[in-house]
Image 1 (cartoon, one colour):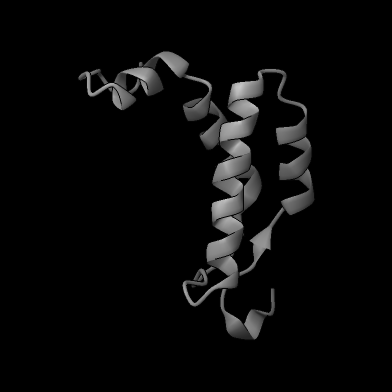
Image 2: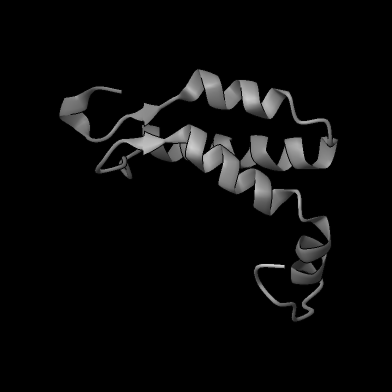
Length: 84
């Protein structure tokens, strides 16, 4: 990304390597879809104002996406406690 047009996606190659190394297929696919959305938005009119640390986001998103029990509860409309 060009600095004149907003923030940059920083650490993309390292983030891609982290995602590729995830053994669980469901978690890896969720992260792939999530990062495809980040990329589409970053290329659109909704560019980030500041740089985006993709390595940090990958760690946080992996933590969330790997909690399949919580995701199932959310998708089925069940209430669950955040942060388990």
